[in-house]
Each structure stands twice: as C-alpha cells, then as structure tokens.
Image (tube, rainbow, N blue to C red):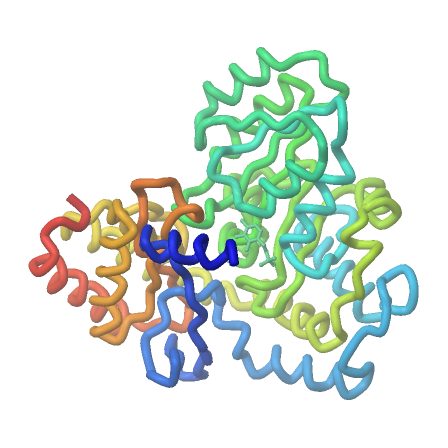
Length: 390
Ligand SMILES: *Cc1c(COP(=O)(O)O)cnc(C)c1O
C-alpha cells in the first residue's frame, strides 16, 4: 500500500511518531509513562487542575445529575443550564460581554475563521501560529498572508501592500505553543487600529497562566478590551477539555447562528462542562499557583541558558531547548528519559526544519527539587552530548 512507503519515509527521516500511554499521578508533577514513574515535563496541565479534587468532584456530580453525554448539539438537545453557566462564567473571567463554548480549541479556531472571514477578505497570520489557525485559514477561503514571526515591521508592510479587501483580520497566538514567547500585543493592537483590521488572539496557553488573575495575554499587557476576538481552550490550564470564544454579544450571537463547528457537533458532556466551571473559580481565587509557576519557569530558563543551551521562552511555562536535527532532539529526549524526566522531542512539521527541540512545560505542581533535578540532568548531559545546543 502507498502508505507503507510513506511510513518508511517518515522512519527514514526520524519523523515517525508513536503513542505513549500516560497516566498523570496526583503526586507532585509525576506521571506513569508506559507504566514507568517519571517527572512530567510535557503536560499542558499548567495549574495541576486536571487532578484537583474539587474539579474532579464537580465532574462526578454533574455526570450523576445530567448523564454521561449531552445527547445532541447545542441548538437541539445538548444545551443545559450548566453550559449556559459556563459561558457566563467565561465571559466574566475574560471580561467580555459574552462567550461561546466549542468542543475543542481546534474547533473554536475553525469556527471563528470560517465564519468571520471568507472570499474577498484578508487574513494576516503569524508564521508560528498553531496548526488549528492554519487549518482555519485554509478552510475560510479568505486570502491568507503569513507575516514573519513576531515581526511588526513585516506585519505593517503586509497591511500596506494588501489593500482593497472587504475585511482584514490579524490573527496571532497569545503565547506561541512551541517557543513559549508572548506576542507583541501592544504593537499589534496599534497596527490593527491604524489599518482598520479586526484582531483575534489565540490564548490557548495564556488562559489561566498570564496576567494577575490569569485572564490571558491582554491582561498581561494591561490591554483588556482591545482584542475583538479572544479564543481560549478549556483543555490546558483549565484542566478539562473544550474551547471558547469571548467577545462582544453580537460576535457570540453570530457564531451561535452561523459557525458550522458549533452547529453540527454534539455538545460537550456535562461532566466536562462542570469541571471547567470549577476550574475557572480556582484560577480566580488561587493566584499563588500562577506565581509559583512563573517563578519556577523563570529559574529553569535562566539556569539552562547559563549552562550554554539555546533556550526559547522565559516568561511562560513553555521552554524550548533547540537541538537542530530531529535525531539530536530524540537523543536528548532519550537521555532525559534515563534521568526519569519525560520531555519528548518536538520535530518538523510541528516546528520549522533545523529547530527540532526538547519542549519542557512546567506545572504549578512541580516543586523546587524537581527543577533542581532537571537542571542537574541537563548539566550532566551537556558534557556527554557536545553537539547539542551549539
Ligand atoms: C492546544 C492549542 C489549540 C487547540 O486546543 P485544543 O483544545 O487542544 O483543541 C489551539 N491553539 C493553540 C495555540 C494551542 O496550543
């Protein structure tokens, strides 16, 4: 079969992928990976809420009351009082007029991009945006122009040289998922205003993590209310699953009426919705989780940098250690594995060719000794694998 050849080619290039069975343990920052206990440094569960007793209990109670599944799409039989409660809670959290929940963050991006823009419109998209934005742009049928990563001058040049479209939408990740850097939101907002463009920010990794109250990238910069369309997921710091869009009442009403990923898919199950509701409350009332996460992330970034590694990020819990070729990243990942640290290699097409890396993500559940252990592992590995990071 043709796919056998394709698979062989992937193996040849060091790009073959396999599933690992992972079971997050309630003990600080640990997980069973294929049955072996390891320190988890690859999870998106930034605040540890996926295993929080209150969040899990909310899911159990909602399941007992409303059932295992939602039984239909939101506009048929799948909507319930808790779905409405979650949307009100998210709007309050994001300080917008309204919010709408979708089944995944991926679908939330699809929903916005295929509904808000179409033929005759222009999308300006950062070259490092998440795959779900890329796919949404493709499906939207709008003209899509990619600007260089975080390059405001390039964005402005492309705004200038692409005039005459009905609408223009700038879309950017708030926190870039593979590098852990934060979008230059003040400059992007300024350009959007000057060129009359709409602005959408994907806050998948910023929700619950950035800003004093965890409200995301716009709170981080003190620019709440300046972003037309704020997307977030319930699947990362919120610890459940699903995605959402927050914005004006009319934006949300429009998506409810027109967005195909919202209309033609069964609503999230009650247990998931109740977990997310409980988690948002914890995010707002326990800021110490965020502070601990930020402090540990900064320390690990600084230490790895001073060991001589090429490190991305610094202001978020996502830290990239650039290795270059896929084989080098895989080798480093295997070395870390022998130290009991789970941090998989990230290779093309997830990251650009030549920037294969280890991607570490921290969690509020980690403790200082875990960070010490990672630092000493990288120190020991540095002397055995000379080529990495140079
Ligand atoms: C994870 C992620 C998504 C998709 O969210 P899911 O809820 O996992 O579907 C979208 N955008 C970015 C930047 C992400 O990191």
